[in-house]
Amino acid sequence: MKFDLSNLRGDITGGVTAGVVALPLALALGVASGLGPMAGMYGAIAVGFFAALFGGTGPQISGPTGPMVVVLAGLFASLSGDASLIFTAVILAGLLQVAFGIFGIGHYIRLVPYPVISGFMTGIGVIIIILQLNPLLGHASPSGTLGALGNIPEALSDIHPINLLLGIGTLAMVYLWPAKWGRYVPSPLAALVVGTVIAFFALDVPILGTIPTGLPELHMPVLGGENMTLVIEAAIILAILGSLDSLLTSLVSDNMTRTRHHSNKELIGQGIGNTAAGFIGGIAGAGATMRTVVNIRSGGQTRISGMVHAMVLLAVALGLGPLAENIPQAVLAGILVKVGMDIIDWKYLKRAHQGPRWDLLLMVLVLGLTVFVDLITAVGVGVVLAALAYVKQVASLQIEHLRNLPEHLDSDEEKAILERNRERIALFEFSGPLSFGAAADLGHHVREQSSSGSRVLILNFSSVPFLDVSAALAVETIASDAKDSGKQLFLAGMNAEVKKVLEGLNGRVPAQGSYETLGEALQAAESFLKSAPESGRGENGGAHPAPAG
Image (cartoon, rainbow, N blue to C red; front, side, top):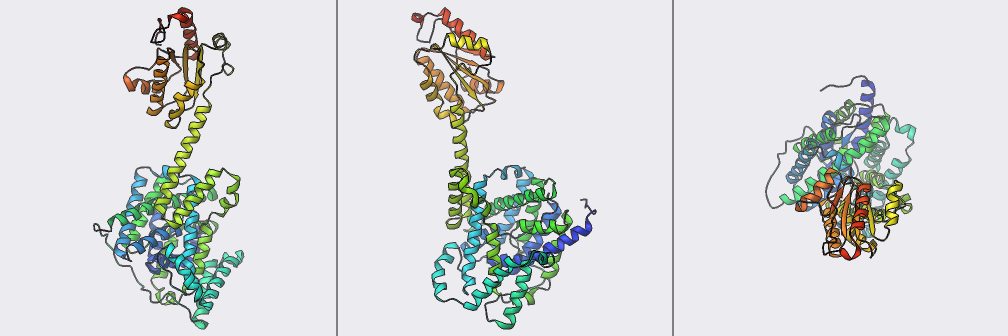
């Protein structure tokens, strides 16, 4: 594996800066997951190092993120804090991500509609904020969003004023820290240090307490048992969510560096990182947008910067315990509220009312399901509804573009034929690929738009690259209706793929005539009308059916 050393100084500077920024976030997210601050540190180290080493986005910094922690916190509550099963879920999630990369699924994960992404990301931000309200008020946060919300009235009746002021002060410091100072000391780290020092010397507030130091222990996966379904479900959502989070961050990186990431390679790197994190007792992670931006702005350009960031955290983790034990919970809560606020998609919320109403409703639905149900349901429902809405839109356009007019024809000869036989020839021209969404109304629309005096129906497929079985069956229905009403059906302009689908249903094209071009079909229709008098129509639509082309 080759390393680009042309930007070594910038990569080291960017990696060290990103490591300093990641330190308080790793501790805070570890606590929020329920597994403790060092689980956050080990996750940041493992995912940060291996995702950089094997990934496909040069300056990307990976580690614990808010969305991943929300899933882990829910799993922690469901499994009553069984760490071995939680780390098993992290390992399985990593293996799934590796599989995503190997099978090339990276390109498809990015197809999730933006309102769905916005909804669950905003929901995750809201969840993080809700989970920190009790610690800010001086109380332990119950497991789960609903539990945390339910405990707020009790917490409000017994507020710890000093704890609340410390948390609000931390949040204010993170927001108000001057940008020029942030180049040297990131705001979360400054708030962490200042808040901890003030609390240590002057305040009596809840702190993290005893934290183990040293190298992590090996955690082997535990397979089987009654809770395995929960573990697998969590692994799937961690893999999908982590992949989405990482690839979105990769896009941000591409925009900043004018480069192009390798999505499937990135998923393999993220998967290896999460697998390693699970084995050493770390929480799952993904590409972290804020840390990646800090790295790039500090000079990081290649994978070396991400590896340096992980090494900084490892050096700190080996001797951090005694110092981190005194970090107040209110300080971490203040930092996490800022994380939650950053995750909320304010940009979309401000302009959502200007876009399609359906997109806004979909975003709000996914947001609500994320906060009050779970992420799996939210993403699943959002993707299905978005897909159905898209199919309906496409189907409506396909039906609207069915034409029964001569004015759009390019050929004067074709126009003349159709004009001479306006009441006897009904021409319908399909536009674009015919999908199952349009199939339901296809036959009804043709039946409705055909004049009662028409004796020939022509379906022009010149602009149809392909059709599915549902649309082919709709053509069969049109053919059956034409036969029942004594009309001839001619098909024109079918390519090989369309013809193959139509023939595949019953071994033949369901029409009396098939022609290469629309002009040929119109000429055949006029010839048929001249040779078949009105009284000569039989039950099959005419005594002299046109020959198949």
